[in-house]
Amino acid sequence: MALIPLPLERLLRQLGKLPGLGPRSAQRVALSLLQKPDALAELQRNLADVAAQLAICEQCGNLAFSGPHVPVCEVCANPARHNGVLCVVEGVADLWAMERSGMFGGRYMVLGGVVSALNGVGPEDVRIPQLVRQVSQSRQGHSVGETPVEEVILALGASVDGQTTGQIIADRLLPLGVAVTSLAKGMPVGAAVDYLDEGTLGLALAGRQRVA
Image (cartoon, rainbow, N blue to C red):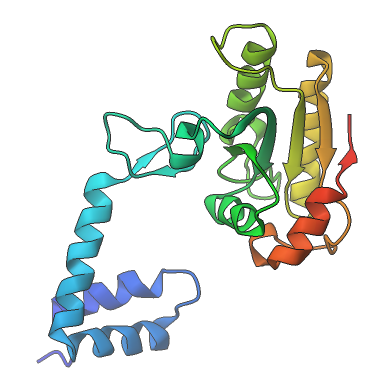
């Protein structure tokens, strides 16, 4: 007779694949939930709600919970956001970190990763083409009622892949005549954006430097 029932074993395997959780941590989480049926039922309801309402914003790649029929996130749907400045981030966690800083009032483009030759990820595998197309259309007047993008801020990590991705973006945006800047002061080498505190991010955003 197996010590761990098959449904629980499947749950442990799934939990163990989550970032920051190994087999032992997954086991502790699962046992904690199993000993609290109310908490387990609430978690089940929350997961079901998220799965039913989740969409990817068709404009920036952020998570959207406005329903599958109107897949636009709260940032893109906010008319008070400045259309002329676009901040490029690697992932949704980076976007959240920028928002926590309270220093940025423009819009975003979530790449969904960075270019990495080692991992076989090329420029077309992330949202670089969408970024270039969006900037180009705004500057050519194809986006009705929108302010043309005048500046693109590269809020990417200071890793080799992050810097490589930023350079590719700068090169592709160069013919469009848009200013390309990057986070500067307060951005340590090798740092990921979503690990920086609000003050550091604010300094980095305020001290951004022109790339192209």
